[in-house]
Amino acid sequence: MNLNKSYSKCLKPLETHTIHCEGGHTMKKIIYFMSLIVVLIVIWRQIGETQAASLPSSTELAQDDFRIIVQSVSSDNSPMQQMSFDIIVANADGVPVPSDKVQMQIKMPKMLCGIFPATIREIRQGTYEATVVPVMKGRWEAEASVRIGNEQYTVRHPFAVS
Image (cartoon, rainbow, N blue to C red; front, top):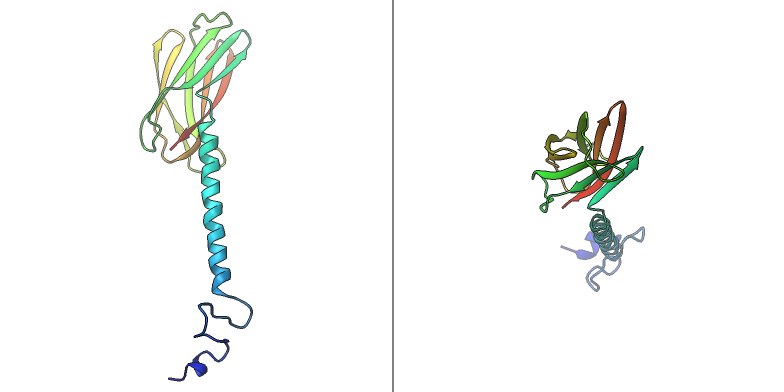
């Protein structure tokens, strides 16, 4: 077999590790591009982990002489594992306030993976436990809705699943 005929459009295919073909495409360019993609993925993941680590453990809404606090309770924030949150409702002085209705749901902002309702139970007056199962890793948002009398209050609490 004549190698020169096989690589008639290429220059010096056997003398170097890089085969230079018409159009200027080289293996070096492909390897460089793939390396760049890997570096960008690593940086993107590290930024995501840093942002997740900087999320607050609790979020508070103070409005109309009421304080509503949503706090992450679970130590294991893994996908497909039950997570717990406390929802605390009090007046401005910190005295627990009974709520007519408490609900919570979780979702991933800017993603289309669904909205997952939490199971709510009252632990004691003004304190509620919400349990829910996030389905995948990433940044999530818990949205707690509390009704006191005729008023509805909503608290959005960011959390991470890793």
